[in-house]
Image (tube, rainbow, N blue to C red; front, side, top):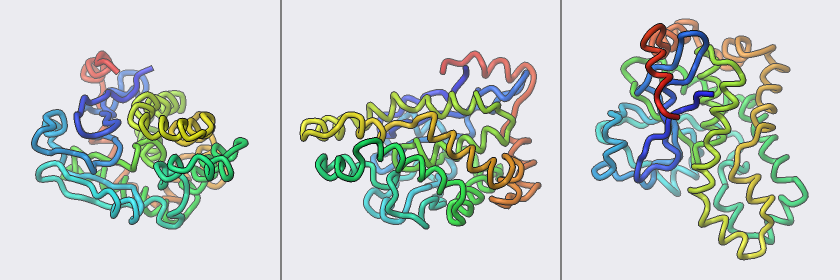
Length: 276
C-alpha cells in the first residue's frame, strides 16, 4: 500500500512527502506540497540540498513551548514559522518528553514498566482528539494547509510520529483516504524513528532499561491510532463531525484543501509509481 515517500534529508529526521498516497480510484495526494518530519533543530538550510529543493514556504510546529525553547527550529530559507501547539493543555505528557523518558532507566521502569508506557501513549492520543487545545492546534494546521500561498508546507513535532501522525491521518482522511491507507502511512515512520533514537535507546538499555518500555516510547503502534479513531467516532460520530464540530474547520477551507491537494486521472497514476 502506498505510503509517503522518504525525502533523503541529511539534517532532518523522518522527512516524508505525502504526495502519491492513494485516495481511491485514480486519485492521489499531489506531490511536493505537503511534508511531515521530526523537529528542525538540526536543519542546515545551506548544506541540506534535499530540504532546499523542496521550496518550503511554511513550517507548522506542533510542539509545546518547552520543546521549542529546548530545541528551536532552524527554518528553510524564506520559510515562515507557524506554531500550533497540540499539547499545550498537557505539556508534560509522553510525546513531549521522549528523550527525558529514555534518560533514566530506573525511573522509567517505576513509572512506565508493566505495560504502563503503552497505556500512557494511548491516553495521550485520546487527549490529542478530545482536548480543546489540541482541537485549536489541528484546526490551525488544516486552515494553514488549505492556504495555497502557504504551500509547500512542512508540519512536524519532535520525532514526527505522534502529533504529526494524527495530523497526517486527519488530513489524509479528509482528502478521501481509506482508514487502511491511513494506518499504513501512520506505521511507516517506525524505521526512521527507531534509527533516529537508536543512540538514546542504546544508552537506556546499557543502563538496565527494559526494551519493551523503550519500544513503546519510540514506536507508533496500531493501538495508538485506534484509540484516536475510537475517540473521534465516539465523541463526534466520525470524521465529518470531528472536523466540523470538534475542530470547527470552515467548509471553504475544506474545499480548498481538496481542490489543491488531490490530483485525478493520469497524473494520479504517475504519482503512484513513485517509490515509497
